[in-house]
Image (cartoon, rainbow, N blue to C red; front, top):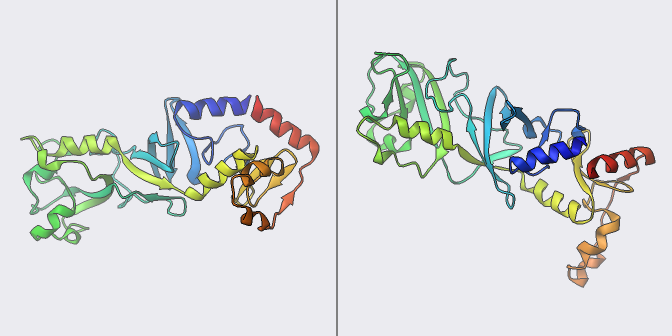
Length: 276
């Protein structure tokens, strides 16, 4: 029953069941144990990922690829977070995720005390009546003699680098400035990719009748009815289905398979829970 509730939540969010997992009463070995794949159900409304102190709202996920769209929660709908930004860059867990080619960086400068050579349309205020309070720039301003390093700790108290989609058209900004466009761009999030090898391994495991999971060292394993398969991520009962599509020459390839047999009672309980 726990597995059914988990699957229902992930399907509602358009997310696959593996490698993601929720820290509830469900066994963590049914997902990828690394904290970078742990999802928090925020107010029972949407899934959230966390990297160090930053939380990201999961907006979309492609079931056929390893791409997903996430957005920083501290900048959701507001360029001026309640707390002073603690992180200068939007850092991912690069062992698990990476930016896609659709992303570009915007740099936000807060509480700037001196005037800076930034176009008026790239300014925004975090305090009523503040003058030259905050700016946002991207690489398009660098050819105009603007050195971003001049802002770090000299003119401004805080600097934040945040990814957005390259398709954001700041050149079409309204008369009041481009800040509203940036607010919308931050709500649209940015695209990242998770480890594709996990997607491939899980597809192979499921095609052989197994369930995807991980061991105590976060390595991928395929849970089979007769035990656990760590390589080549296939259950013995379904191997003939996979190999039937391969050229005959590949049938001679042998795999070193490390197989750990669970106690019968544990195996029975596991498959009972995951099939209900």
